[in-house]
Image 1 (cartoon, rainbow, N blue to C red):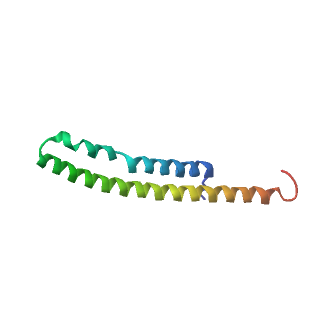
Image 2: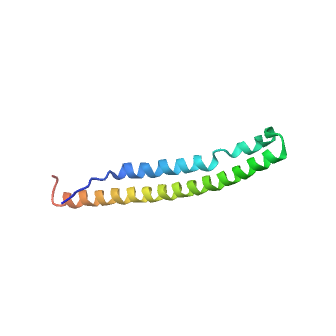
Image 3: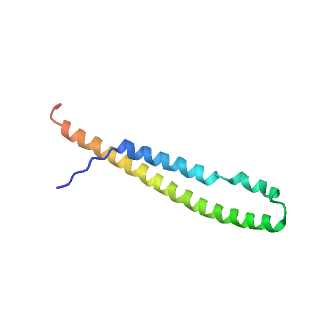
Length: 97
């Protein structure tokens, strides 16, 4: 029979880290659009704007997925910690061990 040990605090910390990463990904590159003028002609600027729009869309999808994973991990970590606390309390009934 297999057994697993889960550290609820680490799972919860992973959730926080994923949420922070999601925030970073969501804002990454927003200032690049203001530099489009440096490309010069309209054709290059238009292609750049199209690429940036697509990149922004994909980046925001990734950020949303990371945020969802972060929330799920934070919830799972809290559940593991709650279960662990409950198990310890049940073992302690009847005296310290």
